[in-house]
Length: 160
Picture 1: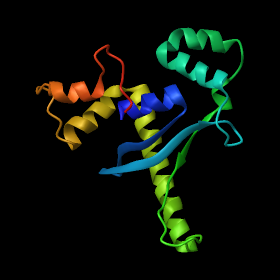
Picture 2: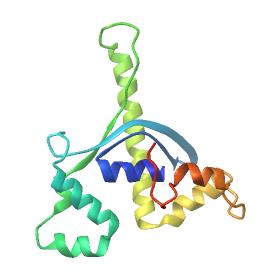
Picture 3: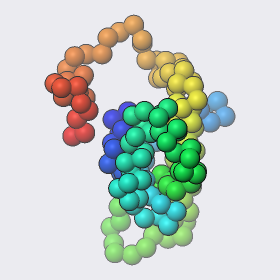
């Protein structure tokens, strides 16, 4: 998830993002097919907006100081969620199938919003979900082979 969210911030788009949250006491999970940072018209953001988002990610304090004088920067972009359905024929799906996909995206929006809001406000909420609901054992070290898959030798994230 970290790698995919970082890819979204750095490139403006990512695919196959795993999301989870507790809804009414039940752990719900899903995989969002695609996420893209877009403007208010649904178009990919211009490079200078993406550069600002990268700056915010790298140094939140200086970003807020720079942006406070120029108005509400966050009103200029959104994260668009997309879902792809494979079809056997070249036609639009039935209305019931479209409604099902719509509800799935609403659920993914809720999961994504919960996850990103909780991580921003209190990372311990996300950690609590990982520890208690996924039975993550914090005292076991991550296998170095897995770390090698995530990080290049210079410490940069490998998006491949």
